[in-house]
Length: 517
Image (cartoon, rainbow, N blue to C red; front, side):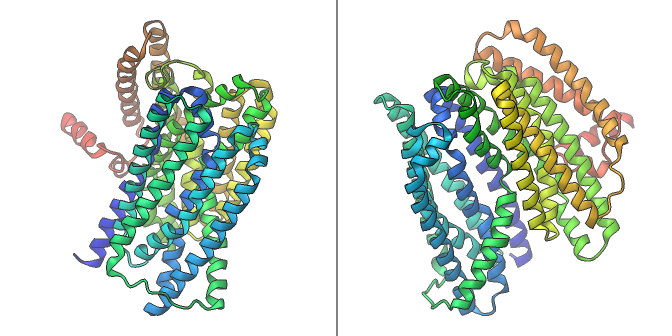
């Protein structure tokens, strides 16, 4: 296989692994809540950002940066020196984080509004020690354009983690463990998954010579500078949903009384983030399919072609995001009952669903900024979103509870998207954001929203248990999706080329052409 073909295959596998990993991370929350209840989900999800943020650095951001440093290094010995230097830097960072988290766990738990979470935070901190090896091994493969090991290790790590997690959860419930103990065992599964991934990467790397080499102080300084600037900037900006969850962890329980009911309410709210995250993943994956060509135009200084590609990306992203947002809002009642056994928190989850549209735009614009080497600008946009989210939570959560937190997430991503596109426009002139496009999009999405609203009014009396909800959910998805696709075609929101970027879009166009001819 030619190197270019091998790399292209690796890119596809890496992308598929990312989607599968996100799906696994979304799917296991359902049985977790079903087994442990909303309070159990609260005990798990409240501290989840502390585990996921560092895990994401080891899975995505740091390997990319390490690979970039490795590619720039001249000669095998120099590459090994860079890899070992990266390992030492990340290991030092990991040990520092473990010591800090272990010692400050009671303080952080108090800030979260629940001292009982301290032991779980300490279990989570141990997983930080796995990040250096995972990041360096994945980065070493990516430096030679071999993405298959990274892709395989992602899927393997998450499959093992979820399998061990659910097994521990079932055993723990059977022997009578409380929600906090269950969360500790659940995060212990992260250690098992990480160790298995390291072993798998090590076996895959058996053809490499990872011999020890002396790392010069100058190399350590250079690696430290890149990892703590570009690496953290890329990672920081890419973790939008996790930062929103972290703000919620520190504010919702504390601002709503910090009692049992407040914690259960937080657990109910935590049902929504995996749904929104999966919707955002689907939306941005489609909308950003032309980002590589956009980057090539930008590198060649073809600004007009870059602007055309960016406008196309915005059209596709907004079209899919609008459908995902209104669709998720419209089916939230039967979806909540089908997945989580009851309709608790449906209004707040509907409000949280509105963040899908803004977050999709924020993620798409952030990716474009990073693609044109504006990582720090993207990171600043994320900082602004976190500050806005915190401010809105402090204002609305005491008044409206989890509904206020949902509004805060939507406004934070909307602010981030506005800032990012403003900065993008300074580099790649987009002209005026075409209000005509959004007006046509509104005419496309409103009919679907009205149909789903009518179906909710019909179904609210008929949906009495999970099976009813599941059947009605399927009917609503097919009906609402059909209405939206029909209106999207009639209003000519997308070009033929943009339709082909959507799954089954070319087949749909073929059917339409066949019918018209």
